[in-house]
Length: 306
Ligand code: GYE
Image (tube, rainbow, N blue to C red; front, side, top):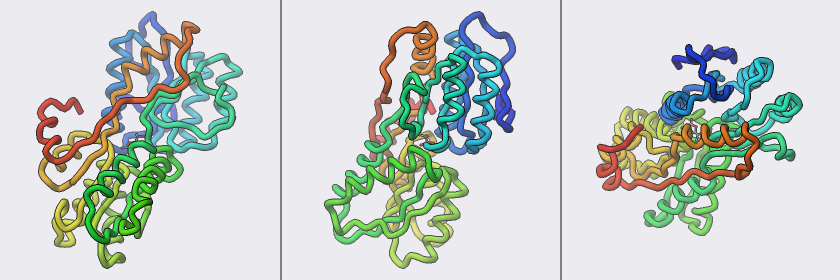
């Protein structure tokens, strides 16, 4: 991305303001969702007069840890980050705590026994998103259904939770079976590759459940290349509802999308100012989201922001 140094280093826009300084350790630029999320954080930092030091972790935990350490050295007022995976953050967050720098988790959660390591967690309920996807399938499936699942980044909160919620929602329907489940790392090329392999190894695929739009879009390419019609021969359910996903949904190539909003920037800046001022904030702030059918996507597309 424009502002990332790509190696866990940091950069900051010219013209620092007299507001607060935030170090932000982003996951990477793996998907349309992530691009929209980065833009939201950068735009809203500017609007709020927050001096943003932005780092692109290129989907590597070690890069994010380096970036957080560098933010601590630079004595930023607050650190915000979206953890690429759930585990392995305690040591670096203890360093931030020792330096008295508050941490805000944004988008993704961590798995830690010590919830004093962060001030608040702003983001979606990924288990609920998985449930919504499974519920739609349970309500719309007739007869035996073979599902292949394209998982997000291994060990990430959205991959773990979207898998769990989906499994829960289809549990009462023994006719619906997840016959294959593999990671496509939340990328379009990953989704395409894994789907190509599934199309060769699985004799009957009725439904693709992709943990994000990009992997679903990659799967569409693989399905077309195999001479099948996406949305008809093989139904597709995804999560995110970014522009490209919504366009494919409106065109009939995806069948259902569960929304996950990347527009967290404004709420993040508001929370950051409060945390730095020592004000009380809720420990958990959940994003509000909806779902889209093909008809709803057609109606929503013209005014969609991302
Ligand atoms: O769904 C996916 C992205 O953490 C919610 O990360 C986010 C996920 C999003 O790569 O597209």
